Amino acid sequence: MAREYIKRVCDRELELKLETFGAVHIVGPKWCGKTTTAMQFAKSYIEMQDPDKREMYIETAKIKPSNLLVGENPRLIDEWQIAPNLWDAVRVSVDRRNEEGLYILTGSNSIDKTNIMHSGTGRIDTMNMYPMSLYETGESNGTVSLSELFRTGDIPGDGCESQLSIDELIFAACRGGFPSSITKKSDQSKLMISQSYFEGLCRDDMSNVDGVRRDETMVRLLLRSYARNISTLASNQSILRDINANAVMSETTFYEYVNMLKKLFVIQNVEAWCPAIRSKSTIQSTEKKELVDPSLVVAALGVDPEYFNLDLKTFGFVFETLCFRDLKIYSSALGGRVSYYHDRYGLEADCVLHLRDGRYALTEFKLGSHEIDDGAKHLLEIEALVKKYNETETQAKLRLPDLKLVITGTQYGYKRPDGVLVLPIGCLKD
Image (tube, rainbow, N blue to C red; front, top):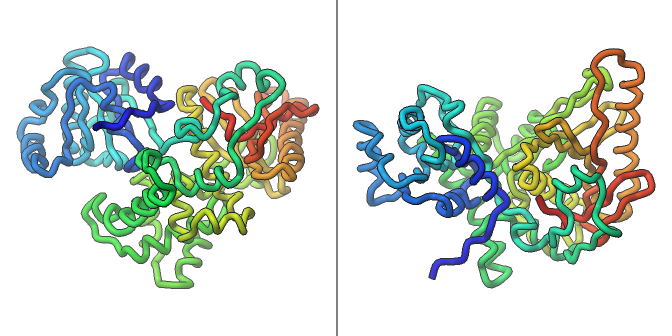
């Protein structure tokens, strides 16, 4: 019996994009649910990775790719990058038919632009997918909507309350958001999914992506070092030195492997926000090290939930990865993107959430209640810095933050007298 589909936050985004564009390209890491979600909207489909038909499909794509597009629309072409010229075939078909919602393309690798003739701009729009958020897995009660926060600037009612305990939050991070882990019966089997993903990534996926054999041991060491430096501003050179404490990896190989992991949507670093409020020479521009899901950090470290019960400091960094994942998902329909702020004077915001229309939220991630005051202080200092800049700047002025959020692993959410909103991750939704 087929499992019931678990609704995703991106369902509405995909529906809107199909109403607007001729084709939609869904990208994201393996196992995050791209095909399953696409199948809810497709009326016909073709699976390019089907072992019984793969070679036939590839040969057809070489000779007459338009044959593979024949079928009721929207037509799903799963793992289209196996035959890259399908991209141009889809683009031409959209141009000729001049209709919306014709095709859905899914892929676990980013586009190799050398194999396509046209970007598809205006015809094929891209939608990013991630593993599931806490709201999608049912662990966040969803009493606070991110979009409503931006609309009203406040938590509804007298506040909010999360039912997610610290032990449950640790388990959710270790299990991760890969959909197949949610439906398993035992906690042990749920935890095995991300470990299996990690093993397959090191053993097979890093070589299968482009047919170049890569050293499994080196992939493991790289990801382990990344995990040890997760949610920090560690430089690539420091990570390389960490790897070379146990093996010998050249700088060329390091960047090649990192680029492959980005191509597989596993490494998803966070860029710096560099406004003009201070000299750019004083603002960090190093990318913050992040993976697409907290469970991959845990798998790379080789630990389990019990480990974090004794090391909540380390879990705080994993918690930040979880928060980044969920904010990306919740803000996706609003055109959200994330960055961070950190300058040499020690002033920082763990995350700056930017919306397409220019609104933004200064955000700190604090696992425990004893850290909330410190997080709020940072946000208020950055807001004061923006105000001071606007008072002295005669031309271009910076928008003041629309929200100041401290997202926590605690139970209660509320608005502080200073205007900072304290929000448990277990209450948040899109």
